[in-house]
Length: 263
Ligand SMILES: C[S@@+](CC[C@H](N)C(=O)[O-])C[C@H]1O[C@@H](n2cnc3c(N)ncnc32)[C@H](O)[C@@H]1O
Image 1 (tube, rainbow, N blue to C red):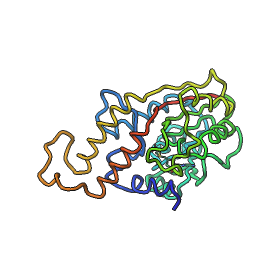
Image 2: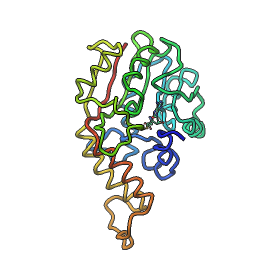
Image 3: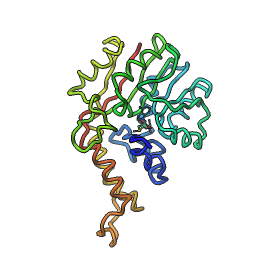
């Protein structure tokens, strides 16, 4: 099992987490009206897919459990959708969910896909893992058809604060959103075709609330309900896992961004 598989094996397989985040494994996109992590995850993908073309051939990069892939199949037809992921387990998980399109085990930074073969690429909250993000952007530019669009949510993480550099490669660290934008331009996207929305503040505030909600959720009581007597005991292993999973990433967030880059 490689480090990425290890990092995601519980999130991908835990039925409680499936319910918690609606089948996604991402932070979601929060608004003041968002009621749950699952709702935030759906809202994130709705927001990204609003930037997609009406029709065409589309690629889902790092599809996770395949919820976004299923949505692409519904919109474009399974014959027009390809999904890639580094983790073979996630191909099985997505198949179990009913995803029928072409799913391949492939490194997003070295995709074995023909040039100019997609009208749109979706990449939800994953590019910070790739070795490297810059290499992925160049490959995304290569496989897009002229006028094709790359639509992503991404997180600019600080490194050196408890995140494993094999899972969060140091070469993906940037010091500012401007430097981050420069990576798209270096990959071949023209400067006026790269739109970056920064969603950091709303995300961090809401995620902090979500962490508290997560404890309640995994204890089986609704957020806001009175604690039960036995909750003063030490956290169970599962709770410790989720605390470190969510919090270690949360404290290392520099910026959260939504990107649309046109070729
Ligand atoms: C935070 S999860 C996001 C999953 C999914 N997009 C979602 O929103 O639920 C990160 C994903 O990146 C995938 N991943 C990590 N490195 C990869 C690589 N080099 N190539 C392809 N997929 C990769 C992981 O297997 C995982 O599915």
